[in-house]
Image (cartoon, rainbow, N blue to C red; front, side):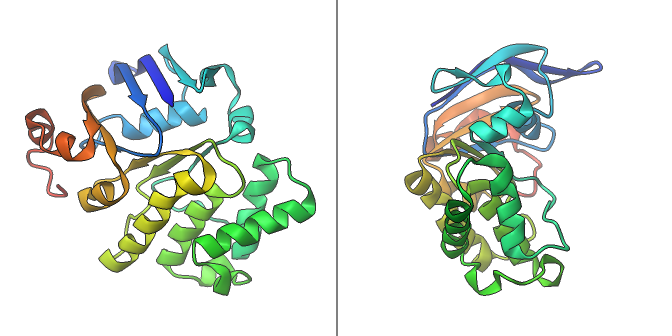
Length: 238
């Protein structure tokens, strides 16, 4: 369980997050809202890229904000980004192994087993030894997810992981994302504008708009909430 209390982030005169209080119950949870709603800012706070002006983030009674960003990664906070962050000159295996070496304390042999296991889970075994720059956008996106879930993460933050993927590949990714909590025990938070992906993956969803919490609850109920519909008026992606 992730409990966020009174979280505020200010950039100049703009409040990107405005006293957000929110609980993610576990499993795979959605975090949605129009562009500029504060979704990525919340991820940046949780992963240590941004220091909030006020507030608290507790995960299973652990004060996340008391940790350095490096310690958070070692403890089990993982994330992807809107733009692919793979290392183009390395192989698929090396990309995933590099993350695992910096975010886990397994022995060398255990680390190799963990990487091979996650490559099989994400369908990347056949391209294991391929250099990333030779691969498709689909493979790069799946590598990003593999890097985020290798080993034993506690929290996985996925920021638009299906961006640029066609429907068939998005459906493949949805099956992986939905299986992550059962596989690893981690809480997954998914940010995406594709409501079909959110519905396919998330039993519970929260909505931000202008840095404030608009709604939170079972996904089907939230997506029919009048306040949520109003927040998305004019957004072509919904």
